[in-house]
Every structure is written in structure tokens, then in C-alpha cells.
Image (cartoon, rainbow, N blue to C red; front, side, top):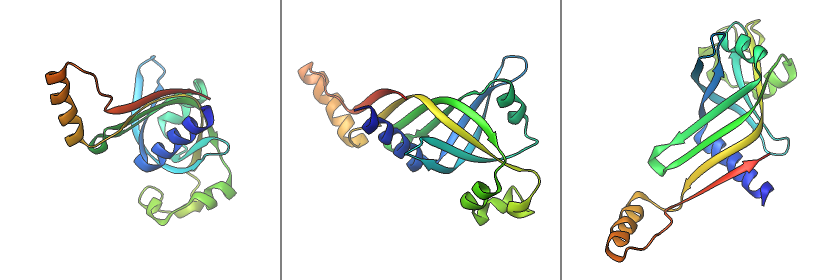
Length: 162
């Protein structure tokens, strides 16, 4: 069961693609920024992101490796929160493996830029909410609940300790 839920969580992250990565700054305040997945390894498991080595999040991660990745896809009522340990990785082979030309927008010098690094997040816990049906079916079930005073599950949720 754990493996199936873990696979589900990572597949949801792949589908949604952009996470709000949350770190803690030097004053203890939580900081969030959007990050696009570079790669997801279901077998390891790990989630990879490109970043600028001079970004403030690098110092925040070096001070406290714990991060949260919050994914949301409101149009299908899918939500995902992944907690884990982040590492800054300087590995030219991995950079080359994950590189896509769209990244030139952030790294104009390309994959050989001295500013480029990878963040590897190793998940430790995840919570997810996955819509079991469309909004129309959910609305129908709410109306049916009011009429019949019954309960209908309109989404699947779960916790995964990794």
C-alpha cells in the first residue's frame, strides 16, 4: 500500500509540475517560491529542481534542509503537500541529463553556467487530496447529500510516510 501511495503522490507531482517550495529564512519566517520540476525519480524517490546557486533559498536550505513542496491543480481538485530533505547538488552529468532549452530563460549561458545548480528533495511525508470525480459530479453529490442526509466521498485523500 505504501508503495502504491508513494507512486500516486509522485505521479500527481509530475502531472501538476509546479510546486511552491517552502523554506525557512534566517529570521524564522517561511518563504515560498514557484519551482518547476526538472525530474522525478519514482524508484529513489526524489524530486529535482534547477536553481541559481546565488538564490537566497540556497543559504536557507544549507541552514535547514527541511522543505515543503505544495502542488495544486484546482481545475481537477488535486492537491499535494510533500515534506522532505533538500540538498544542493552540483553535478554536471545530472544537469546535462535534466537540461531543457526552455531553461535558457533563467540561465542564458546555458547548462554550462557557473550559476546553475540542482536541488534534490527526498520526500519523507506527503498528504494528498485527489478528486474522485468532476466538479459536476461533486455538485450532484452535495445536492444528493442534502436531500438524503447521506455522505458521499467526492475525493480521495491520504497520508504517506516515506
